[in-house]
Amino acid sequence: MITFDTKIRVLYRDTDKMGVVYHANYIVFYEAARNEMFRAIGLPYTMLEKMNIVMPIVEVESKYKAPAYYDDLLTVRATIKELPLVRAIVEYEVYNEQGKLLNTGKTVLGYVNTERMKPCRAPQEFIDELKKYFE
Image (cartoon, rainbow, N blue to C red; front, side, top):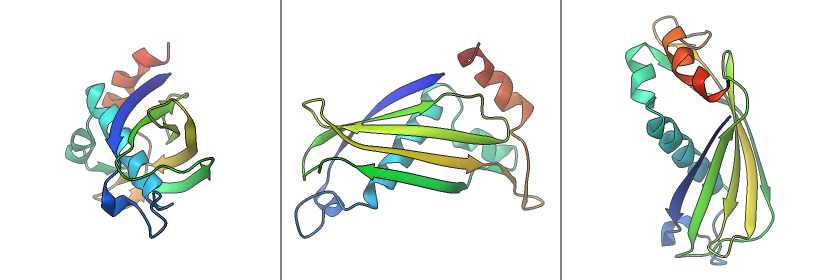
């Protein structure tokens, strides 16, 4: 299992007229946390792109429990519980500075070969690097 925390400061642009984080921005926060997690474990997306692989989102969930506000410092926890062979399922928890759970979510990402624009399995080199987290 891989778990990684990313800090994200809520910017004014992230909020709506009510002064709370606009609902769709949580998905942007998920992406930031997911990117930082892969980078931290030595597997940045650029590595996959060099192998002609991209990871489009095929499913997303987001559940809102309490609002986040402008200038809040959020902790976005990204977790992968299963070795992502055919798809990567990433779960998220978003906390405020007081440790209150504000949001939970999930993204399901596939793998696509950019030369053929067809779904594929994760490259073996990528899987080999991830295996140590799932043993």
